[in-house]
Length: 126
Image 1 (cartoon, rainbow, N blue to C red):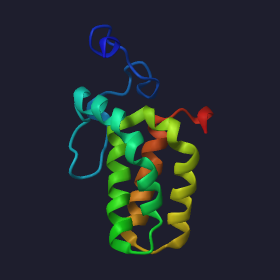
Image 2: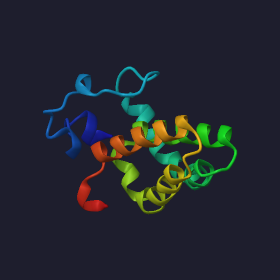
Image 3: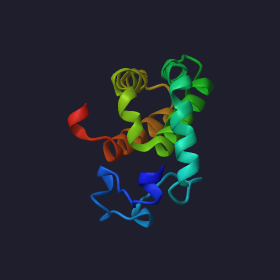
Image 4: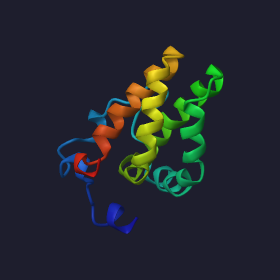
């Protein structure tokens, strides 16, 4: 946290500050980039529920898959580049959800999730 606040560290995906927070376009309920404290707290807890989200995104009950896809989307928004550590299994689950073509909400959220992962995570990691 000290690096981020005191030293003004800019993550790799911000291109050393070229991309400003106001330039980011996020899904509807989130108007701007979440605050630092919220991002740091969620980064600690995402590892506890990401396996469940991976499983629920491919669920045959559309309501459960829809909720899991929203949770996945907002988890990516809050945890940003720390999602890199979960990409191995997460990509498989997202691919399965797309192949099932069950719900338009799930497909829309997965597509947005892929865009956000491409923004935040370095491509050489996956």
